[in-house]
Amino acid sequence: MNEIFVGVKEIGYIETQISKLCEKYNSRNGVDYIQQRALFRNYCHDTITVFEDCFETSMLGMQRCVNKVKAYQTKDDLDIRIATLDIVDMLCELKDIAIIMVPIKDLPSCKKLTELSAENIVSKAKDLVKNDFVKAAVGV
Image (cartoon, rainbow, N blue to C red; front, side, top):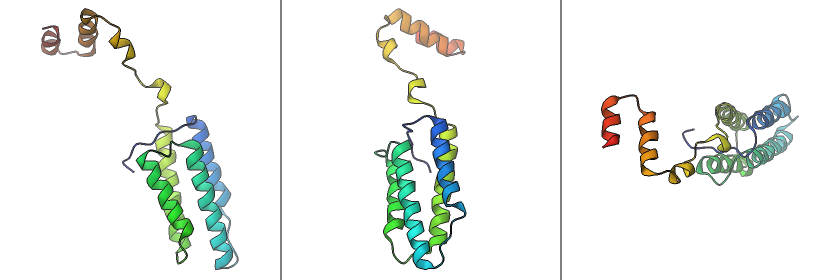
């Protein structure tokens, strides 16, 4: 997944929800195809609920995930094992992404830079670089 995913909950909460979802359906099997299909549809529904609870679903990456799960949920002639593995793979990738997510509150902001004078901005820009040639060019 190469898209941008935005979590709306704490990282630990997202990890826990994904883990609970995987554990809940890990060992469940239906007696026949009809029961297996009903169980799979519940799995899809719960997966979409976790997506909507933990991530910003208006972003393209999460929209693709939700649409893929919804397509599996509504399709009748489906190999449930392959679809389940695809969803589990998606959940594992999202869990890995969640581990390295940076909370929005911790992202840098440029608001304070707009309040600085030109001299202070040049000084701050020089502090960001180690190369003396670049520092001289910024000063000019």
